[in-house]
Each structure stands twice: as structure tokens, then as C-alpha cells.
Amino acid sequence: MREAFAYHRTNFLNAVEAAFGRRRLNEMSVPSPKFARMLAAFKKQSRAFPLSENLAQLWALGKTGNEVQVVLISGLREIMDQPVRPGAWPENLKLSQR
Image (cartoon, rainbow, N blue to C red; front, top):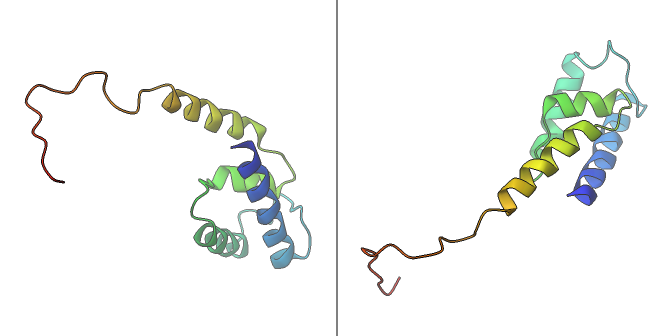
């Protein structure tokens, strides 16, 4: 997850640089329609990564977004702690060829 976070942050900053000519934006550039279009295009290109508008704004302002990463990793750990299948099959389960 950490590698994916860093990879997508780098790609996002490359997209910011391509659109704005610099990798770090100011507070006035982030709410602009140009930023919204760039973000929509980036999200469409990187659908596998859960990029929120909040995280995109943090990255664009030159922040790391580590607090968002901690929340994502915490949620992932919580999900991974759950069993993949139940400990016992229900008694009324009917098995078939499928």
C-alpha cells in the first residue's frame, strides 16, 4: 500500500506539472476549474487508486498526505484481519457443479 501511495503521488505530481508547469500549487490554484479537470482526468486514468479530492489537494499543495495514508492502511489492516471465509459452512448449504 505504501508503494502504491508513493507511486500514485509521483504520477499525480507529474500530471500537475504537465497541466500547470509546476509540481506545487498555491491555495488559489487548487479550487480552479483547471485543477478539477486535471484531477478528473487523473482519476479516470488511475481508477485502481482511491484518490480523494482532499488527498489530491494536499498533494498539490506540496504536502505528503501521510495522515490520509495512515487512515487507508488502518482500514486495510482491519479488513485483512477478517477471515476470508466463515469458520463453518451453513448446514443448509447446497453444493452444485458451479
